[in-house]
Length: 398
Image (cartoon, rainbow, N blue to C red):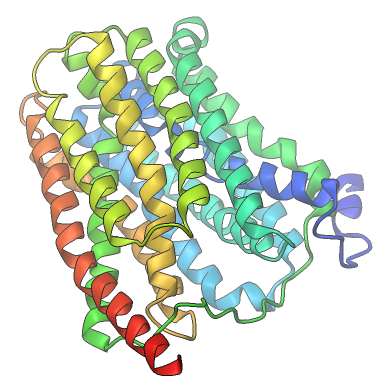
């Protein structure tokens, strides 16, 4: 009760730019994807240590993402009506309890249900941490820091997971996922109570036709379906390619740090280049990386492929969101795009599970690459139309 009193007492606004508030936002933002960001290692643990088959592990990963997607979409409509600190507290508690119950069950159906519940807690944390960072004085910089810490967490945990499995078993890793959310409880008092976000119109925003907006949203869905297809099985792809578990973990750790570089590059060049070239390079480059993960391969090949893959993923993501913000002048496309992102990440692992054949992952790579190409074909028309429309409007103004 003393903890609850400290969390919920004095529901007064906080200085969003203070160190305490920023630390609270970043910590909640890192906890929210605590399993997804290390999903390759988690799926590997389900297969090797719990004895699930590849398809079952994919369904478990997909269930968590469906839960995350559900509350992310829900919070889009109710965030302005609720006390953010209370939502964060109860969401952290849900994640703790769902993970705790995972330590006492090895039944596939029960595990799917529990991962879905854990995802429900994570989804609201994603929404509110991003919303809170968006209210700060310098959101671009702070989003960069948030992405950096998420990827740093992912790099360290992915690297440590094989050793943790050997020393403590699968349940030891689950206990970490259960206890980590509780680390944020003492800092909730520094989290915003609520947020009233003034509508912000991007400088180059235009109102595209419904058809073009639809293409853009389906592009977002296809791109993150591809990510969901590939990311969940990268660990197993590495092991099937002849690498040890620790070697795969090391390669994925390197890829997380490469992802930090991709996000920072996007922040640096965002106002210096258009969107069509970075999106083309990022999406096609990601698809090309999968070509090097067929059959057997050396560690250096795996490390370079997944490193470049993660670099391009985190470079592409900001350009996709920036494009979505420029397709209408009321910001609604961005809201829908984030929802499509979460749905794509939820569907991806289940789709991948459906194309795996006897432990062979070549179909996963081909499927992911195909979805990447599809997303590029869908996003280029609205991006080019936006550029043309904005250029014509600017010329008239001049």
